[in-house]
Length: 386
Image (cartoon, rainbow, N blue to C red):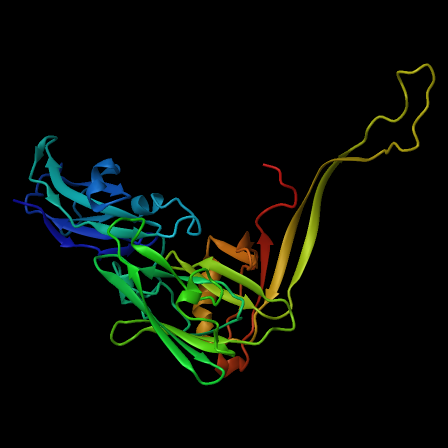
């Protein structure tokens, strides 16, 4: 008999969560029978599978005779780039199934479909093999919220799924203080290689290239709000309100979300930085013991530092938020990649590690006003020592 594939993952998968295949064959009566899976994982074009990594997996039938393969750990281990390092962080993977019993008897190979693996994760209570393209804002690779704020000098980009053929389109709709509106539809070329199936779509008013979509002024009137939306029906998008300059210097943070792309948030309220030194000391020998007489120099110390460095910590505070921000705040707490854009003019960033380990999430019903405090460790020491 031939292998039948009973369960397959979707065409796009979040590789930190299970990616499940189920296979069945009626010839499994032998106690030595097991299913095999040759898993190919590669980057580049669809036709480049021969240059990828190959894994050999085997599974004994379960109580109902099926072989269940979860290939997520293998796919996820191939996604080694930082999200900020690679615009389109993705891999292709393809399984080939067979069976083996009595050491040498096999059937015919059955090849599964080619799928995409992204460096992200599903959340409970989503089902196994949930397709991320069913999320509310797809092809924008974010969970929102659908209403956000920015400063006129902000930079920022959103991950945009551009897999397949043709173009993916976004429409930018801007409103100005004098009531003028400008609308512009932008084509993002779709790709069939792993380095081109995700694009970064600018949404910050000073993001390079963004001014070609929407100017920050219309005549002498300033931009007050704009919307970025897909051209799908119904249109899915995010509204951005341009806010006035703030009393405190805002801290612009962005982090890898559950789709392997970035969400952004300005922390508008008070922020503080601490500078903590770490040192080791020793007691040097005082005195001129190798001279004809014993003396000592007045500048000599009895306690000498020999290893000194410093760690820097930053505590930031959000403005008052909508309850819809709670979802991406959770993703901030569990992210493994977060940055501070400390110089937006030159797009300079510093890596951070989140120090806050718990947060009491607030709701409008219980708390009326929702505001959060987050502490980060700056991910680089003060001294440039490698």
